[in-house]
Length: 168
Image (cartoon, rainbow, N blue to C red):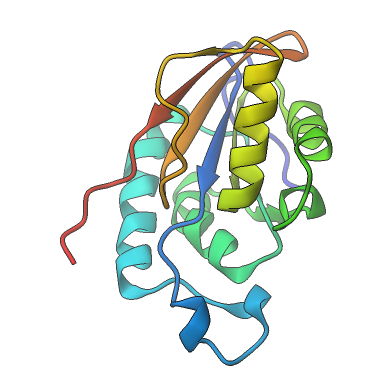
């Protein structure tokens, strides 16, 4: 496990990213967990690293799926961190274990985590039912990032940082 490198005096928070654009599932003939990013997705991952780099993340987590790890790999390289693959971000994970894992991994440093659209949608719906304040419509665009503001072990607010606009 990587040692947190963020500023321990700075505010933590969770930045939950939906993986960038991947090769079409229907055109991929191998194990879906091995499906990589497309050319567009690789460009989105580079822009995400530029956008999220100033956060000085202390940890970077990913679903075990290759496309998720590839989405945050440029940020990890820039930050000098490894990408930690964790099962609670895998496709099909219910909201409660995903949130418990994220909150448990968070600290006084920003946490960046990459997951899938289904998990992200479930997490956002769960947060809405718990009364989290949303500063943005609950959309889950590929390469979009949700900033989740922690208040102790509760997520108090959430806002969408739109996906990078990349010309195809």
